[in-house]
Length: 405
Image (cartoon, rainbow, N blue to C red):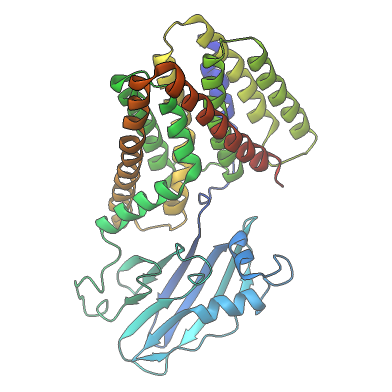
């Protein structure tokens, strides 16, 4: 079984061909090519984000439509304190689920320039806008504009100003983005909590966290550096599956390791694989078939071991690879220049780890205290109820992301 389990999961992972995309959170991206008269602007935003504005995802997203006019009006360039008026935005060919627009702004003044974003901050205060600015023949810098910091003063770029106002987002800024990303990524947190619910001691917790951290750091780096280009919907579906499987594993171990649960999991995945072969959903049939084979092998291996800590650490590593692709979307979409990519990747990854460890430090002592006070009554009850809740979330995310068009 061990010899089959690894190829089975690899089959699922290798079936994730396609274009990379961001993890599910509120983001938008713009690229500004500055010149003496103004700037050429390109904007990318997930189609789902426009639903926050009550806009029709088909009728309202064309050239100079309501969505385009809103975005051009809320993403502005100022010169000498005066706004640079935009031309009519034009829709561009975009990947499925995205809106790409381009327009131009012309500045009457030659004074100091400032970039300002109000995109979606009223509707989603946690929204992040990633702006990338290129000078003619000069530096390319990026900055993350958030609700509390909506402006970026660009005046110092031409003169070589090295002030904080002119530089792009610093390392500490990406660290903060990483912390916010993990703390707002409920699916990632649900996976970590599911692992902790049955962790037997501090050494096991350390092995689980280390395995998950090492794995998602690998795929985060590979995806952001452009070495691997996973397909977004399959990645998101597998993240949901990882949550549901670990929660199911918890319930199965607590319930005595009966044969019914592994069969239900396997047959369900085979049915989904058959539906995918008929064109239902957006995840490929080989991916789902690989998950079915992996599940059979995984439960068979678990049934043979008395203390499954090592096997659970291996699962944390395996699914950490998938979660890393989910983390990568935010940075991968920015298409940073090489000299900015490494510090951004490092700071973001450290931020993710800090946020993850904060959750572990908060949750683990509570679970440990419950286990010491009343192992059978409180700790087991919390583990069962927590696993049931996480299982419900994981199944919902998996099915919605698998069967979605």
